[in-house]
Image (cartoon, rainbow over all chains, first blue to last red; front, side, top):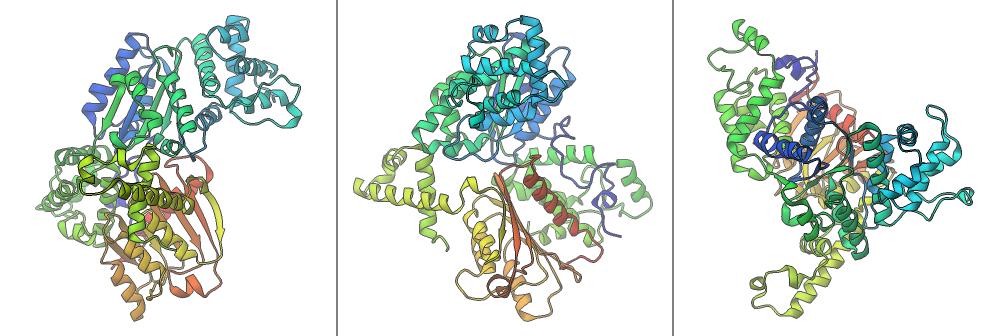
Length: 385
Length: 225
C-alpha cells in the first residue's frame, strides 16, 4: 500500500499533507498573527465604526500568506456578520498584459457574481428606489452604465434572460458588442476608467440599498499590474481607476488588493504617490518569517494538522521511539527541528509559509520512505537543506 | 535560443526601466555612475530596454493557456526554466529515462545551468539507472537542490515548473533525453497559468498534475535514491 503522509504522521481527517488549504483553512491564523489580529482586523473594525467601507492593500513576498489572509478576512467577516455585515467577493487577477485596462478586474468580479445575482439585485433595487437610472445617476454612476444596469430589469428573476440582458451583462464587462446590438440603446464600449469604476460603484450602491451593508471587492495578486506600468496611457488609466476606488469620496463599496513584491518594486498603478496618500494607514506589509516565527508556525501547523492522541498511541506501542519523541518537536526529532529552523534563519529570502510547507512535505516524504516516524537531520540532508 | 548571461542581466535592468518608466540615469544613484559618462548610461539604457522587450516576446504574459508542442518539447521547457530561473521555486522532472550531451541547448544542461545558483528545489522521479548515461544525468542534477526518487514501473513523462506568479506543466510522450528532444516523433501538451488557486480549467489541471507528482513519491513502487 502506498505511503500516505496522513497515516504516517497521524494527520487529522481530511489532511493529505502539511499544506494548508486557502479556503478550508481560512479560519486558521498560522503566522503573522499580530499583524492580522492587531492591525488588519482592528483596522477593519475601525472602518466599520466610522461607517467607512473597508479599503486595504496587503503586500509582501510571494508565498508569504497574503491570499490566506484575505481568505481569513472573508471568514472573519462571515463569523461576525451581525456586528460587521459585509459581502466579500474575491477574484484572482489573471493574465494582464501591458494593454489591459481596468475591465480586466471588473470582468472577473461580474463573472464571479453572475448574471442571475445581478438580475435579482437590480429588481430588488427597483423595488426599493423605483427609478433605477435616476438613483444610480444621483450616486455618480455614469449614464451608459446606469442605463445598462436598467436593462437587466428585462429579465424576469430566475428565468432565462433575453438576449438584450445578456448583451447588457457583456457590455458592463467592457466587452465590444456584436453588430446585432446596434439600436438597442447601448453607449460606446466601456474603456474609460471612470465608466469601469461606475460598474463597481453601481453594484456597491445597489447592494447597500438592498441588503443594507457594503460589498467588498477583493482582488488577489495585483503584482500582475506591473505589466501595465510599461505604458504611460495605460498606467494613467489604472492609476485613475485606483484613485477613484481609494478616494474618501467612495463610501459605497470596499476594495482589497494584494500585491506580491517589496514596497520599492510595487506597480506604480497601485503605488503612485496620490494613491499612497489615499491609502494612508491601510497598506500593510507582510514580511518573511523570522526564525522564531518559523518555530511558532511549525507549532501551529502541528497543532492544527496532527492528531496528538494517535501519535501518543504510536509512542505507547513503541512504533515511535519514545526517547526521540517530544510533542513540542513533532514531527521532527530535536536535531531535525533545530536544523529545519536554522535553515530558514540562514535563508531568510525563502522563509515564507509556502516554502516552509513545501519543504516540510518534502522531508516528511523522505522520512516515510526511509521508514522513519520522525524527521531527523539525515532526512534534511537528503532534501538538500 | 538562450539568453546570454550578460543579456539576461541587461534584461533585468530593462524590466526595471520599463516598470518605472524612468531613465536608468534617474534610477541609478549618482554614486553608482561615478567614473562613468552619461553616454555610457544611455547605451546601458537602450540595451536594457531592448533586452527586456526581447525577453517579453519570448515569454509574454499573454501566452497563458494550453498549447500543443510537437518539436523540441524538452528544450522548449528548459528555456522556460532558464528564462524564469530567478522566480522558480520548485521543479518536477518525471521521466523514465534522462541523459544529456554537450550540444548547445541540451535540455538537462540548460536546466542545470539555470538553477545552479538558485534556491529552487527539484524533485526527479525516474527509473533506476542501468546505464552510465542515465546515472551521469542524475548525478549532474543532484549537484543542485535535488531529491531523486526511483520507480521501476514509471512510464509517465511530466515536467512541472512552479514560479512566483506563474506555473507551467508539460505532459506528453518525450523522455528527458536528447533523442526525446531532437530525434524522436514526440508530442506534448503545455499548460501555463498565472493563477494559483484559480477555478479555471488550466489552473486546475496544473494543480492536479502537481498533486499527482507529489503523491507519486508515496507509492509503494517508488523509492528514495
